[in-house]
Length: 464
Image (cartoon, rainbow, N blue to C red):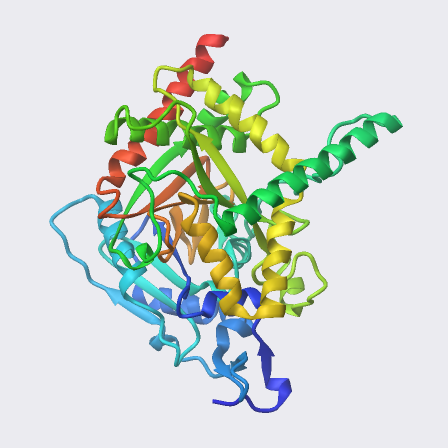
């Protein structure tokens, strides 16, 4: 289909074109649990009146011009075509298990219909859960979280829109408070050194460097394998307790320490004595590149100003996230200390910006298929994917119904292990998606992560 006159179409962004490739076709699944029974009519009405349907990308078809370039073409929306009722009656009261099984099946077997705008809403009545399926070409986690929250209200004030209180993104080139010229030069040299080192490592990952194979490794073709999904649950207060026990640590340091410890625990269980002490297991972590990490101004995003740092869409880079296998008898706080050292070095580099611009350069010069090959090779040469989206600190309501959890994951990639965390109202839930023929017990892996934080909290309490 060729797009009509230019004022009715919008070209798809480079990142969007990459996500739309048949080889990627990445879909975001956002599961939203609510406290009270879902009413079909009120839920449908809420969707019809939501800000989502005021955004042009959610009201547009994907079309291609005579040269094969993708565009968004405005169309009329029939909500009923996007609204799917799921009457999944089960003999178990384990809502998490039922919802996770449903999402795992969607992740590998059910693409979105390209003959309508690329989103769906699945309403699981028995489980009191709404699952939003949104193509990654429409936006990233920060954009979509902002849009969702703009349609919610706080439980304490039915008229107030929730906010994300996260502060500004760290300025990686201006750390520390030294003001003398020697301190400035030292910081610049560190930024240049770490920037070159980490960027070179990314290039080598594309060329030939890869992790040693373990029982959790994926690889070429694994994105097509059946999936299982489990949820690891954490309390933010527990993370804060651990943070206070490690000098100058952050919540992210604690989180990456939990991942390091949890993976070591799991590998000890699955393949004792198979790994050498200190063996590197590398992940790809997605980092937001917008200047403002608090809730986006939707009026600004609707302008779709390509020069705006907070524009709607996909604006994130990748950093390589190395964790190291350690025996389970080490001090659990050492995992946090090592994570802090690694993350501090990452903050001094521009690795996330480098990967973002390299991807755009590959798209501009070589096209989306070449950019996909670059991305795919790095995925095949690493072991896991991780992302972390900050949600609201207070309880929110959706159409007056209190939200009990917000969880996110994406459709399959070559990694056998992907982890996506969302914090909400004092809790943090991490969705652990695995290729079930490689990692058959994601519930046990989730417990490894949960136990790792418990041990760190006990070790932190012992230091007081």
